[in-house]
Amino acid sequence: MSREQQAVARARKAFETGRSRSLEYRILQLKNLQRLFEEKQKEIAEACKKDLNKSEVGMQMYETLGLEGEISLAVRKLKEWAAPRPVEKNLLTLSDTVYIQPEPLGVVLIIGAWNYPWAVTIQPLIGAIAAGNAAVVKPSEVCVHTSKVMEELLPIYIDKELYPVVTGGVPETQELLRQRFDHIFYTGNGTVGKVIMEAAAKHLTPVTLELGGKSPCYIDKNCDITTACRRITWGKYTNCGQTCIAPDYILCEPSIQDRVIEEIKKSIKDFYTDDPKTCPDYGRIINQRHFKRIMAMMEGSTVAAGGDSNESDCFIGKTPTQKTQVKQEITFEGFSPIFGPLLPILPVSGLDEAIKFINKGEKPLALYVFSPDDKVINRMRDETSSGGFLANDCLVHFSVSSLPFGGVGNSGMGCYHGKYTFDQLSHLRGCLIKKLKMEGVNDMRYPPHTAKKLGW
Ligand code: NAD
Image 1 (tube, rainbow, N blue to C red):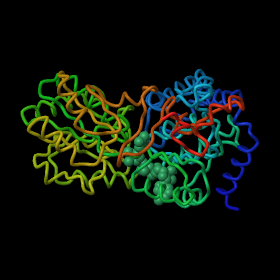
Image 2: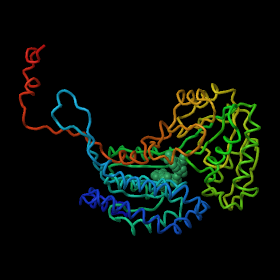
Image 3: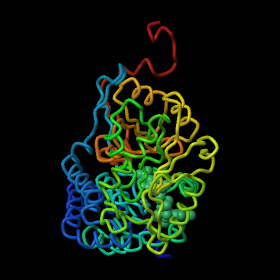
Image 4: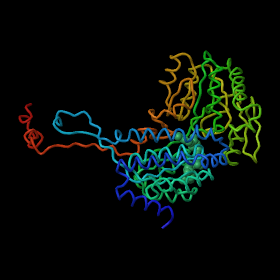
């Protein structure tokens, strides 16, 4: 048996003992996980620094604080989430008890991505534990140091049979995918998303796919451009642009394009100083493969600022680029998310053209609009589709546990965060409990079916 087969078999066996079903046990595991984040900040921060040059505070802000919030929410609400949910009855079932009973699915496979290696791997795990499942955790091998720390720490704090960590790259993930799971929760790019779905189909295993996409950002010429650009600069350059919901490109009218560039340059300087290379808050591209991919995208565009780079250190400066030939230069076919610090600014004649342009592409993971006018915001919302929609800010919807987070169309399927993760990783079982009394009322449903019997 391979290492992967063994981990899955052990998790299945542990699930079959039934211990993950007890609410007390789930809460204990969640609290243990909470303790891991309280006690091991240093180890987690050091690994994130080595992998992505994340600062300790930055790592806490974007990785562990959100996880701790999700854990306390799950601990606080678990009894309510797991309780039977009474539903409306119809005439035939008036005297019955009718409810939805969430039940664990079984063994879940969680495959994480590298850009927020703790957030995107552990957040689904919180829901998997809360919902009473076993879960095999596969962190991204691209984050070499973080995946090692995860492999070392998780078994010390939580049940290592129920929630094993399997490290490794493509061959190990593919070996895992040959096993039978009850749900697969994958975060990463869409090409691999298709591989996951194909493997899942062999076992009829349901999937959640948290993918990427080109999240557009429209700036209305009547808005407060200084504030809009500060917020966009933050959304774009956090983690060096390697955020699944980072604004991918800006659409605005030519009349404000220069102002937008100036304001972005100003915000870049405010946030990351004149010398981002030495600024502790400015990250690095994860590896040389991605470095080369991003540098190749820059070719042929007019660099408005930055543009400097250093391959050995995987450093790329924050680079707003001006595109004047929108339709020729950026088409959606084959144009993958930038996932780096390049920010193309594309001219459009106004809201109508922006909506048309966005709708020509695949449905994005997030869509941003900056405008003081509700009519502009509502038109953008009603005439487009995307995983999430934000007006006058970037990224923050990720932190709201009461909002479902996920993609639509090419940006993914299924959603999570807070109770949505619990529901996503539960089977919502429809239950109807009837008494063996009052058989008389059932007479009309038994053959022979005559109009007379029904009183017609
Ligand atoms: P990655 O390279 O770390 O791959 C993700 C996972 O897939 C890893 O665990 C890896 O081992 C596995 N994998 C890779 N190739 C595989 C293959 N051929 N067969 C089986 N498994 C394989 O990460 P990535 O895909 O580069 O991640 C970046 C992408 O993730 C971006 O597109 C980003 O938008 C997206 N993302 C989405 C979200 C979200 O919440 N929707 C969050 C973070 C990242």
